Length: 120
Image (cartoon, rainbow, N blue to C red; front, top):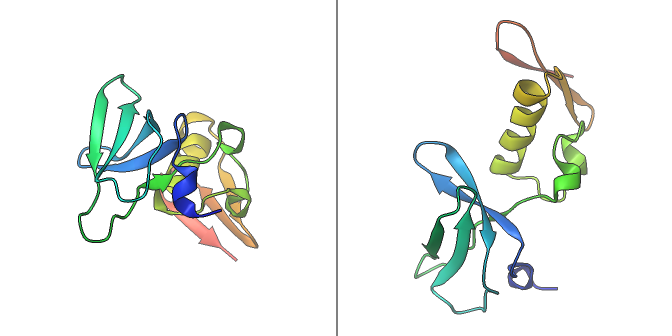
């Protein structure tokens, strides 16, 4: 399966955001290779025609399925990229108050002083 085939209605992506760094959005129309925009619905309910780079046609990062949100080992994520890692750490450290996360053999933990440490 080509990567572009995953950009179908109801799948979710991460798009860059100047305030929040990354925002989640749902695809509202199947993407067809060669199109210049990806039609999205932001979580707050706003429709967005996300422009694709006219030269590279790079698509935004796909979002992991909900069942993987808060996974204790980052290597278990379907998509392992910056927004997926940051979102998973936010869910575990901030929302769930779980201080340990793993990435394979490495432990990532958040202590009370809000520093993030990576231990081998």
